[in-house]
Length: 380
Image (cartoon, rainbow, N blue to C red; front, top):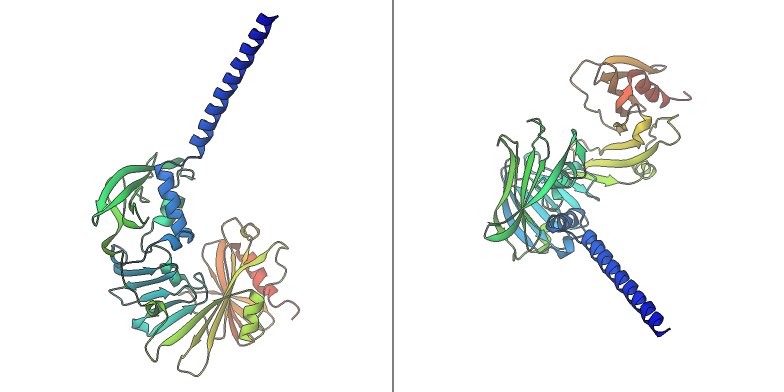
């Protein structure tokens, strides 16, 4: 009996030991799966900066960037969200204090003011670490989980190097199969180990052809800023262009004029975004405005990849230089049709009620586009 109890105890102990080993191995495997490698850690930090979630951890900096696309660029950053970018050759300045986004163009004596960073394309130059282009390329096109052209891009940590006397992680993104010379195939970036700032970037093809490069030529991580330098300020006499986002109803109410809209769209179609641009100080005593809005989902407008855009202004709209086709939209109302291709994609321009309109879509056929344009005169 005693021997049986000892054997039973040994069996229990063996089972307990085996279970412990299994649990330990399982824990190690889970930990290994969850643990980020060096590349993942650097990319996660870059993504945090790109998305804005890591800006509060960024240190202030000022520096000069040399870019093959933009020439010499002076950049200034003050946490959490003040930023100023100056293009030396043109004198164009982009700035934000976190509440207002602005741009001054000296050659045109024009300034742009926006309530959101996406209210005007020029404000994209205030994205973290612009003019470096790594965001779309490292985190999208070169992401190893993204397939394009039948092959996967892989991201490799090459090691560390000194840039401007600072330790940097050197990351290279390259395809497992070459794409030819239509697109840059290799992207290499140098990321500051302490601040996650990208200090240098090079794009090239497998044959060594350099497509793009961008690098800091000077960097000060302990600058002294006057916070007021990030606020909008322009010379007297500057034409002010104000950009505003909001719902379509809000922006139409703001212009205070009846605006035509397409009728009979698919039930799932909705206004994805809307923008209002108002220009003051034009010299003719009038306030010029332009309203733009975009309908989605894309799949309902021809093939996937297009969206329906509507533009209306109290001033004449600039049209393409090609010869249009005159089309009838309603009794006594003609429009100008410009086709992008032989069968699909184009724009219709017309004037109604003292306002100028443009209706455009890259994927609608000629007849579909005209049908939508004519729906704006429904009931007349």
